[in-house]
Structure formats: structure tokens, C-alpha cells
Amino acid sequence: MSERLSPAEGAALLALARAAIEDRLIDNGALRAARGAVMVTPALAAPRACFVTLETPGANGVLELRGCIGSTEARLPATEAVVESALDAAFADPRFPPLRRGELAGLVISVSALTPFVPVSGEDAIVVERDGVALEWDDRSALFLPEVALEHGWTRLELLEQLAHKAGLPQGDWRRARIRTFQSERFGETGG
Image (cartoon, helix red, strand yellow):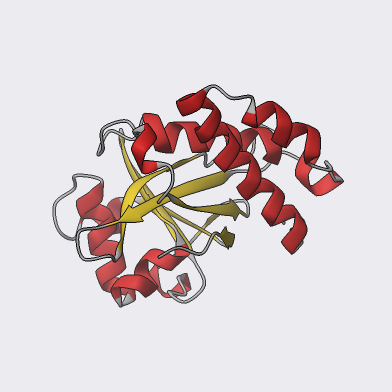
């Protein structure tokens, strides 16, 4: 189990994510400055899988997804994993065009620091209020962070069907897939 992060450590990850995106858009040294300002604790230096979610205000003022990418393997220190994920979410999420400079002011960022993945023996082992779920079948995979099912009000079955759909699998094929769960600590900016 990964060490829990403190609110200050979560704030540091958010600052690094924002600075990485700002620096790519404006080339103002924000990332270098943020790296210099962050006190790297043992928890931040430890390898950690993480996701960065970006939202921007929609036409009706409600925040809408603008990008979400991360890593499922804890291969980089948390401070570096969050930078990589932030840049990928902003500029390489295939669902969206690259972030534009004009979107930076309204951008709301959240960071989800993940625990290691655990295989589940069956669907009953999944707790919708707690677990993120990853599905793999042949060369297809999909993942939902824990908050996704809550935000949509999905039951366990709806979560699994939506995950299979996201992976491009026919309805019910989640039963043949490898399913793993994880938890996350989410740190977010306030927006709106």
C-alpha cells in the first residue's frame, strides 16, 4: 500500500501539474520555479501512479472534462509522474485538441494519486463508493477513477458495462476480462 499523502503534498502535486502546463503554453520558467519551491518528502520521492484531470467551464458555466491521462504503473517519483501526466492530459489526450493558452485561466486541475492495483476474484469484490476499476482483455483496456461511478450514479453492474464499452468490448464481455481495483487520493483546485 502506498503511503498516504498529506494535504501539503497534494498541494505540491497540484502546483507542479499547473506549472508544467503553464510552462509549456507560455515558456515562462514556471515548472523550474515550482520544482524549486516544492519540498520533496519521502512520499513525493517514492514512485507513484497518478492521473491528472483537467476541466474547463462549459457554455453553461458547469465544468466539463478537458483531459484526463495518467499512469497505472508506479515507475516515476510522484513529483515527476504528475508532471508527465499533466502534460499528457493537456496536450496528448486523443479525445481533445491540445490545450490552448486562452484556456489556462479557467483551467481546473485535479490530481489522483493511486494505490497499487489488486486483482479481483469477482464483481462482488468491487465497492463502487471506494474503488477505481481497470479492465483488460486481449489488447483492449479501460480504467475509471473511483469518482467516475459516483459522479454518474452508476451501480456496480453499470460501472462494469461502461468500462467494457470504453474498452470497445460488447455488452457483458467484462465477465471475460481481467479486472483490478485500486483506490486514489484526489487533490483538486476549486473552480467555477
